[in-house]
Amino acid sequence: MNDIYDVLIIGAGPCGITLTTELKTSNVKVAIIEFATPGGKINIAPRVDNFPGYFQIPGPQLAMAFYQKTIDNNIEIIYDQVISLTKEENLFVLKGNFDTYKAHKVVIASGTKERKIGLAKEDELLGHGISYCALCDGHFFKKKNIVVIGGGDSALKEAIHLAPIAEKLYLVHRRNEFRAEESLINELKAFSNVEFVTPYMPKEILGDDKVTGICLENVDNHEEKIIDCEGLFPLVGQIPNSQFVQIPNVLDEKGFIPVNDKYETNCPGLYAGGDILPRDIRQIYLAVDDAKAIAKQLLNK
Image (cartoon, rainbow, N blue to C red; front, side, top):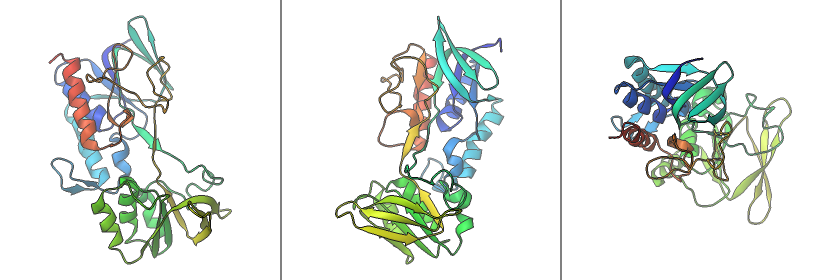
């Protein structure tokens, strides 16, 4: 591709779409590069609570609202996966699976992906009892035993979505305390078919062709416990989508991207926003706020 963009944005989640909208309306030559569904991980969220303008909304519906912004503003989305990001002289070079793209400035808004629990059979039993998306796959486990592993907001929301479907739902967490909001914990506790299993860690996934159960180990006394289940949802955190960054001193030790108060990385002209930042709280409204702040920097407002 011979075109040189003013700005290229990696990732069509809330941050990327909001930022592109802001820039496009100011006549900046901009495009988003995205290899999956626009809207990002909102597409697999069972529900979103209290996003400005909505009290409660299904994730895919909110993702569609973001995507509609790209349609309304005639925003260019390049459907490709960035496999390397480098800087050559004063231009950024983004190599994808299908083409190479160049820009004067780049914003990384590529978000995160699910962290795996790291047990044998986790990959081979994906789709055969293991899932990372309650909204996508919950209906497969109607009136069956389900185990959710995790203690954050995402894990609790997924469990709340699954509880009315399940015969019995077990929430497994390695600590007695939860990182999730108290309101979510109380909402899940209100279901009569839910059991909290703490402090336990997953030790072994049971089953050959499909999940039949999970073996847990107590963190304190190492006692083992087996739960029979047909559905297993590991929701133990996120890892950054930053493996394509090949510019030195941009990533931290975990692969996230630190920025200054202007959302600038250590590389001039390279910015980052949204879930790719090393922050404790990852919320849609924060990604949107990041986008608006970055737009001000890029437009020198």
